[in-house]
Length: 463
Image (cartoon, rainbow, N blue to C red; front, side, top):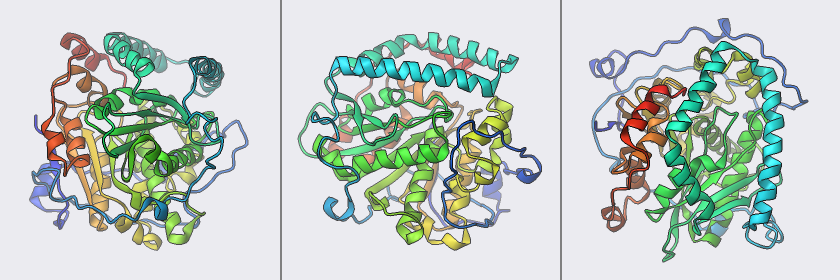
C-alpha cells in the first residue's frame, strides 16, 4: 500500500474535518498522577540535564493531511565549508592507532571477547532490575522464535558484515567504552559520497552498531556511505551517556568522513526506535548548545541536511505507561532516563515547545519521520504528534506512515523480502534528490528469507 504523506503546510484548527478523518485524537492522562518513583541506578551517576534551565511547556497540536512526494517541500540549507563548520573533536595523531581505526582480525576477536564478557556481566546485572516473570519468559521465547525464522537472512547479512572489503568495522571515535562505529562504503569511489549517520535501536538496553548492517548494505549499494554509531547501553550508561556518545560519533563523522570518501556537506542523521529518540535528543541538544545555552560544540547542526526518525518516540511522558505495559517496567525505564524529573529534558517534542527556546525548532534541519500504523512497541501517534508540534512551531517536518507495518517490518522483514523496499526508496529519494541518474539505476534486491518465514516472524515478533 502506498505510503501516506503529511507535507508541511498551514495547519487548520484542531476541529477541522480533515484532521478528524486522518487521525484519531491522541489523549494522555496527566503523567504526574501515573508516574511512580524511580528506582535508583546502582552506580553513582551524576544527572546531566539536556537544558541548563527549568522549562515550561504548552501547546496543542493540529494537522492537515494530503498526499504528496518527498520532493518539493525539501529545500537545501546553506552550508559553510568543512573547515569553517567542523571543529575537530579528536586529535589527528594516534586516534585510530595509526591504521585509520581499522583493526586486524586478531584485535577484533580480542575486542569481541572482551565485549562478550562485559555484556554477560551487564546482562546479569540487568536481570536484577527486571526479575524473571511470566511476561519476560514469554518475550524471550518469542524472541528466540523470531530470530530462528529470520536466521537465513541474519547469516547472509552477517557474512557480508564480517567479510566484505567495503565494511570498515570498529573505528574508534571517542575515549569512552563502546565509542566505535562501522562504515559501509560504496564499491565505486568516484567523487565524494553522501553520508547517513545511523544510531541503532534496542530499547536503550541491547543496541549495537551491527544492527545497522542490513541498512548499511542497502544504502551503500546506492552510492551512499553509512556510519553506524555504537553507544553505551543501560546499565553501562544512562540516557545522558547515550546522547553524549551519539554526539561524539556525529562529531567524528563530520570531521573525518572526507578521509573515507564522504562529503562533509551532505550528512544525514538517522535513528531507529530507541536510536531515533537518542538521535533526536542529540540534534536538539546541539541546537541548544549553538544558541549559547551549553558547552562548546565540535560539530554544527547546519551540517545535517535532514533527520530521519524511524519508529521513534519523542515525548517520554506520554510513553512511560505504554512501555510499562509492554514489559519495559516503569522503574527500569526511569533509571535509564535518570529519574522522573528528567523525562521532560529528554523529550525532544517537549523541549522544542519551551517558550524560552522558541528558536530551536526553526533552526532544526528538515525532519522526516517514518512509522508503521501497526507498531505496538511505539505507537505511530508518537511520530504524528512530534511532526505536528514541529510544523506548528515553524519547522520543516513530515511524517510518512506505512499501513499495517509493525515495529520490525520496516527495518528487518521488508528489506529481507527483496524487491523494491518502499521506505528505503523514500530515504534514497531524499538523499539523492538531485542525482536522478543514480536513482534511475534502482534494481530489485534479492530475497534473503522465504515469504512464509517472514509472515511467521511478523506474527511471533515480540516487538
